[in-house]
Image (tube, rainbow, N blue to C red; front, side, top):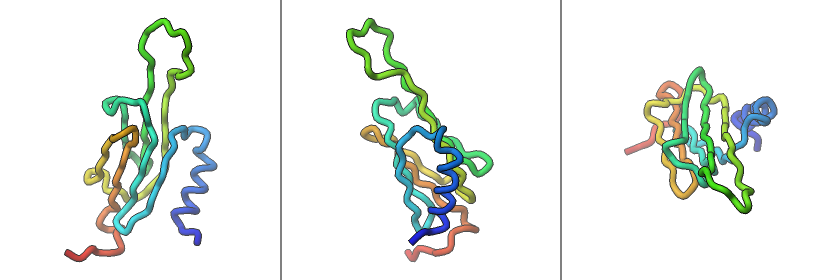
Length: 119
């Protein structure tokens, strides 16, 4: 079954796909979105997560140490991912970088949540 989110993401993937070079899994939950970005080998202090004008941006850069390499197949690289997601409560979002994966939990704003969780 194709959801509205699937259609929106598919359209954006066509539009932004050339600029997005971070492997990502995105799940829609009752309260918002959960994302997993595969970013092995990076330092968490170099990862930037921003949300402005309904666009979530994740970026970082890998720069190898200055050495004389015998073999060098790991190149310096900039990583970026952007997607339009409306009505995110970014102030209450969480981010954790663990074992080479960036985990984001992005709750919807209260006016967008369509289901209350019982306590």
